[in-house]
Length: 201
Image 1 (cartoon, rainbow, N blue to C red):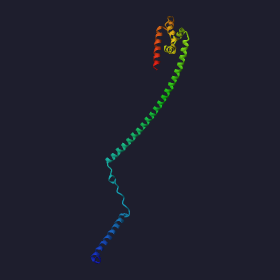
Image 2: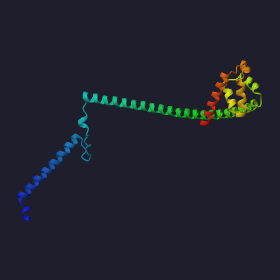
Image 3: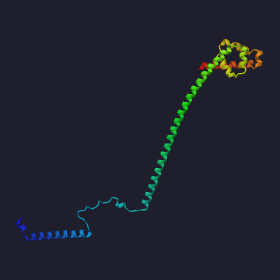
Image 4: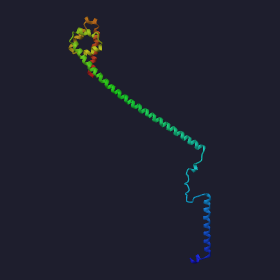
């Protein structure tokens, strides 16, 4: 090793290498100084989109179409949202109307029931009153009434009162009052139908 270090060839080679290294370092420093390059500053990362930084008619057209489509989709979404809101409002309004109708129906049913109860009570009073009258007087009053009202009153009478009244209706002496046998037959049929209806209920 000592012989190698003391060899003139080794010393000459080492001197050449050192000289070359110093020359390269001096040249590198001069180049950095000329180019104003900071050797401690890291170079910026490469831009992955640098290769796409060019413009072309096809890309511009595609970008325009994408923007148009985005605008169209946004408009459709807004229209759908508006339509859904309208449908929701109409559904709520319909539910409110249905509740109002149901409330009115129930109120009307109660009113009708109350009226029917009141009418039924009045019919019973009339039936009792006419039952205690002479058949001829009852028929004279019936001749001024509607057939359906007469039937409602007759339906509240007992059979012991109905017989004399229908018998008086058939009396020819009372036909001038408008209570003819034909009308008596019609009243009898209406009374039968009314009783059948009540029996079914």
